[in-house]
Image (cartoon, rainbow, N blue to C red; front, side):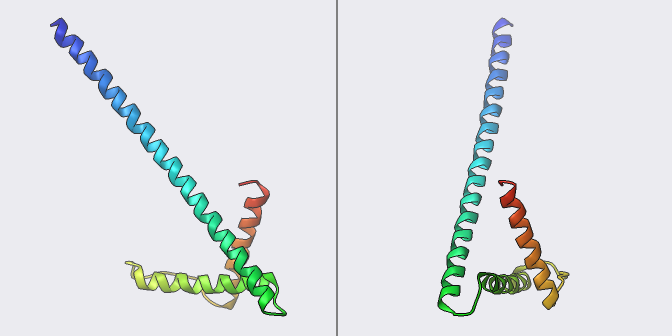
Length: 120
C-alpha cells in the first residue's frame, strides 16, 4: 500500500512537470511567433519606405505622400481581389468608393503615427 501511494505521488509529480513543460513550450512558441511577426512587419515597412523613396526620386513632381497613397490604393484593391478569390463567405460588405479609400488610408496612417508616438 505504501509503494502504491508513493507511485501515485510520483505519477502526480510527473504529470505536473509534464504540464509545466508543455505550458513553457507553448509560451516560448507564442513569443517566437510574435518576434517573427514583428520582424516581418519591420521588413514590410522597410521595403515600403525604400519603394516610396525610389519612386519619388525617379518620378519628378511626386511626393512621398502621393506615392504612399498610390500604394495604399493598390493594396486596397489587392485585398478586395483576394477576398473575392479566396473567401469562403458569400457576402462581404466593404465600403467602396474614392472617398472610402482615402478614409482607410487616413485611418491606417493615423494608427501608425499613434503607435510610433506611443513607442509600440
